[in-house]
Amino acid sequence: MLLVAGLVVLLAGSASAESQQRQCLCKDDFEPCLASAIQDVSDCGDKCKSHVTKLGASYPAFRKCLDVHIPRLETTIDCVHKKFGKVCADKPGPMVTRRYPETIQLAAFREITSMLNNHGLLSQATQLMAVGRKAAGCMTKCAHAGRCLKIPCSLDIPSDNEIVATSKKCAIDSGFNTELAKEICACLIGAGLKQLEPMCPKIIID
Image (cartoon, rainbow, N blue to C red; front, side, top):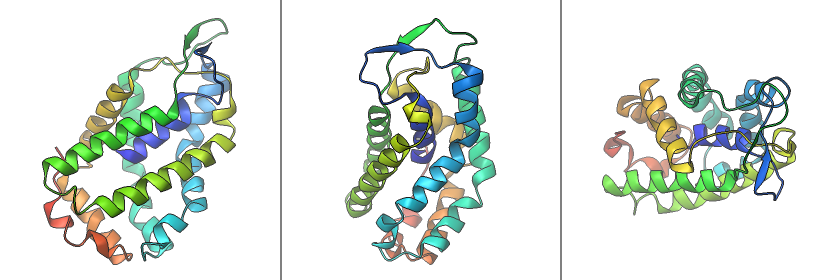
């Protein structure tokens, strides 16, 4: 879910400080960024890999655990796109509220924290959550250096909490369920994230 929210971060807004911005144009702004979103997140992940390797993991093995699920992630993104409807404009003119990628990221972390807390995993996940926040900060900084977040426009999208809730539901509907989460967790342990060992059997996606 955090990864899906990260993709939305790449598409949600630019680096301007204005409270109102022009709505992103579908053909010129949104569609090219949507097409490159997964690759952009992957590239930023490579630049921020030190946060993973500091935990003792092999980054190539870590990437392999996630890359195999890219088709499922693409299905999730397509689901989110359809749920939100038309978020961009066909021609210049419409103005929309400026969206801040950092607030979407915070909403995603709040949801993950709530899920961990509900299943008694929060205390065990403290170190991983701290690293996750640093990695997310690194990736946001990387995204700001890219083309898409420099475009002075925003999308007409729902509230941060609704974005996260929709992303979560679409991820589950696309097959990111409890069984698959445990499978990915086991793969990450094999990649060197031994901190996950006590957590994997307790993971529940609901």
